[in-house]
Image 1 (tube, helix red, strand yellow):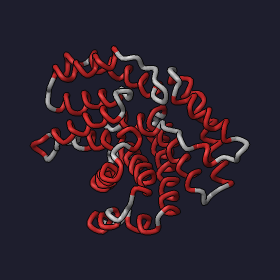
Image 2 (cartoon, one colour):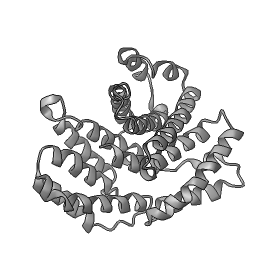
Image 3 (tube, rainbow, N blue to C red):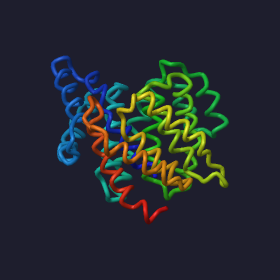
Length: 281
């Protein structure tokens, strides 16, 4: 269920330029922009492995650079979630992504490094001490952790991390809800619909998160409406809302600076969900 959300979040390669030498910063920024504005996911699929190796080499050269490690975490998480079907390989890549993110977290904050793997009641007091300066790292680590959890969804121990991931995203919303165009709201929307209401799910809270995320992205991130339809509308069997959201996605222009790749993937998913709607409802 989390796969489409991880696709949207993990393909954000922004920040890569900060780990490069000054001579290559412009190239890195241009490459990031080109990826985000690409309307052919297969082109990204073909080019991504070379970029993985490039980032690995940067980390070898700068093993204690949090920005380099963050870039590696984002790219490996994206590649594993979107393009790797083989389960064993996806797990290896997701683990590498989480390892990079963990190293970045530990360089950024010793308290968080020592607390994240502790029980929830030990972790949360440390989390509550974070400030707005910690938001980028909290968001990166929470997103990477969620991607790793999704790949390992058959492991109940991995799924036990869900409350801590949720707490991290809630903290991001508290500190800066607009970060990454409201991306943390989308995570929380999906997380709150993992269970039906009778088993502890919070669909109305999820609805509020989805609607807030759509506002914060000014409607440019079409994946928000796809997730809203896929997780909330289907969970509560609201066919009218489901079809309305998906038809709005298909009617929209996918070409928007920084969102074109995400929106192309969103429209592909919207078509699939509409095609299967009669069988589902």
